[in-house]
Image 1 (cartoon, rainbow, N blue to C red):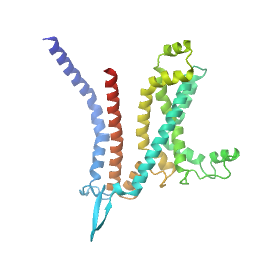
Image 2 (tube, helix red, strand yellow):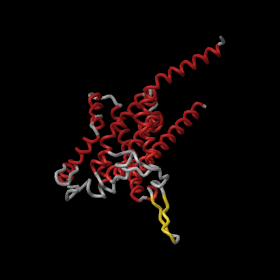
Image 3 (spheres, helix red, strand yellow):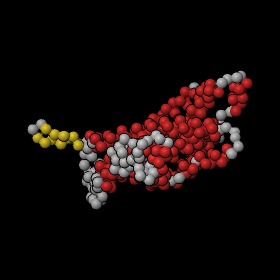
Length: 315
């Protein structure tokens, strides 16, 4: 047997072994993810309701877009693609994702830079920083709901004591402050996650680079801009993408803090309301399908950009 044939046989054997080890994970993923997703997409093309799921009939794209002719040349479009509430939820989701990810990236980077320094008690501080992220989201949202309460909340009491406000603010009830309240809670909870991923990238930077820069008398801000930031950028991008995908499907914080509020209703909340509250199961399935498509497109775009970047560096 030639070396080429032996390598080919070995490669096939490794491929079979890899698929064998992946088989349990793929079966589990199909059961808990692919099958429910497929059913959701199917229901979005039917007239299904909660009490008639088994009798759902195919209606095509009616839930997405349909033109109804009233006669005499008059008519109107119906469906989720012309639903003002849906597009308002899309805008809310995009605004929330952009604002939360931007703030969490900046704060996470600052915290990671601090935690990367050597000081007494660094291990304790690193563990303490992760506490907000470790608390279940529902618990965090309920805790902040009491803190932001306009009558009994400690936030209003502190702001009034400092003279920053003259009367209590209904943070979660007012349309002008509801999104700020949601962003405040999400940034508090998720910034440690960003800091943890960025800190992992900082730990991989060779220390001799900093020593050489120190010997050459390079200012700290220039070392950060020319050395640290480019080297940790892959870790930062991964953290940003993970957090962005999570922010686009935000549900629990919004649902607990500001239920039934147009100012903060996201795509996930919109889908849930139509699925269960309004008994528009097919319509809610269409919203869930569109949300999945948005997240899938972003993921595919990130993978393609990353692959192109890696191939460019190799060449």
